[in-house]
Image (cartoon, rainbow, N blue to C red):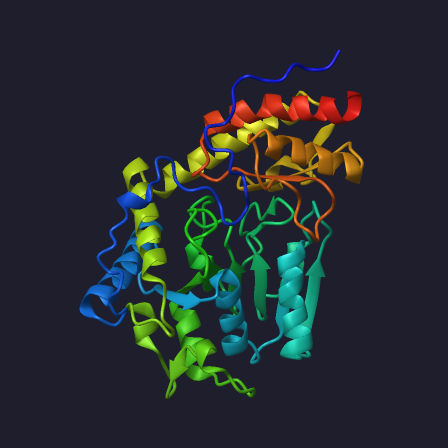
Length: 375
């Protein structure tokens, strides 16, 4: 007997892993649009940019001396700026277990053509042996593999007496996972991930050690203007005080400010983390009760609580039908695995997703599976 069609649908069926769901209760009318049509270099524009920088640092509880800057081209732009500006003086350990980390490895070896590069990798669903990280080397890693659903479960592999810098792509982790800032010298993210902001802008967080590297090292290769973080051997302070390298979208900035205001209103980052973990618990219970679906992460302690990835007992054709059924019923949009990842599902569980929507979704997952396997 086939499963009857559920009667309750998620209020918000947006489960994409980027751009992610807007915060609960989001409305364009709630945005402060006073900056629209004004120069981003006006007192008003720079003030709005400075406020999101200050609020980001405050909400994330960054250590004294850490700097926050807004840069072009989302998390990808932020990571490329850092790699092109900072890598070279030391050997590099690149740790990856999914497509974006592999992309950083490719850029380091094929574009920057660095020779002293140690590849520390694992397949989808796994973490590599992070004990191989040499504290004298620069280390690049993702905190949460957005396309694999695998996160770093602790920072024990990072030495407090390290000589090299740690460069962390944390785009689907910041505001959703506890970050050991004292061990992170460079952190990049984009607000279109965990906070559901609009795309196109990246954020860089620098420790004092990272600033020291920038001010003491000049790469041997030419740097396009859009990648330059220093001028005359000094950090371009404006990037970290609201004077961006290029013209930002002030509407996107207003949208990010709205998300930050919401984070504060629900109790800060800890509340966001708790919401995300509660969302994961809904799916964990579903997996435990259904043999046809499994987490792609091979162990519970490394399973992401934001970009949750699954393998399913369906052929590729059945999986396409499964995803289409849910989209057609308007109960789940954009839940297919990333194009370079193993065939399966990916359901976003960050704090902008409501637990009640995931609870409403799970019966539909069962219904869709029965539809494609039993007809």
